[in-house]
Image (cartoon, rainbow, N blue to C red):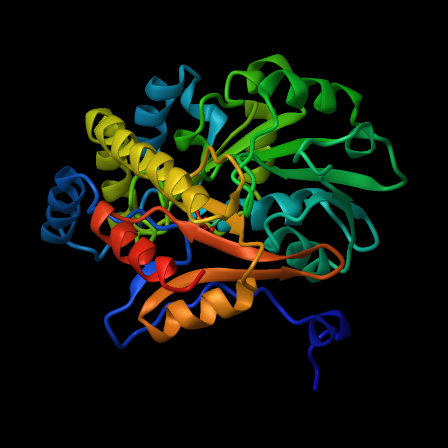
Length: 347
Ligand SMILES: Cc1ncc(COP(=O)(O)O)c(C=O)c1O
């Protein structure tokens, strides 16, 4: 084998199950249960009609211009990617070299650690406190620390580190802080305006969750332009294709669709949380489109397995040295009723 030893040694990131057959109710990968804005399909249809023989715009200018208006920043503060995972890959490649250190909270999005491993770099996991806050060790200096990743809202908890605390952390850190706001639209606050205050703060976003476009693959970074300029050298020339650029631009242009969808998802999240508590679950208050819970009388793994046998997929997570639990994505009201009905008979 000629593969680099650090690649052979690692397990690689394992995404949530995406079953192809069966009639599963899918509540395991935090997708949006509703179809995206109809404007997206129309825009993609138009892009197909005008032909795909040419390369796409390497900068996704149309999206950048529209997103710039939405967030009140200039277009050159935005970098587009093939999902926000692509943004995370670009950042890790740009900031973290072999032997360097990447910091992440624990438990959180597992991909951050995998990205460090792919670089031949080290990673340092700082445990959340029991109330899902982060202590000052998250902001401490460390030798060769090159970037810190913070999922905010966090997965699997759905909890948020408030923007004023994020600013304090960034000011103390000796390196940039990437605030991964994949679930930011579902939360009460966000850190986008902090990017203007401190060049160390960068925010990544995705259309996969709140815009119901996980299949389209489109994410973006908001950072100061001197950083974006460097990151452009690292990304693939055409990392977003012509169809995803047109679909994404139409999606972000339809803020009325977004507001309506967020209201539905958040209302269902609140109902799901309350109903789970009535069944005896301990549920963390979530600001995302999923909830993290455990039941005192029933093992999390059994719940996952029994629900799967009944064609409902949720995410079972077992974090070594920390514990396990289940993460349930917010589905439609009908899907959540089906889930709750089954759980009633299980706990
Ligand atoms: C915290 C977090 N960040 C980023 C992503 C990646 O999203 P995408 O690559 O679809 O934009 C996910 C997906 O589940 C996530 O949970």
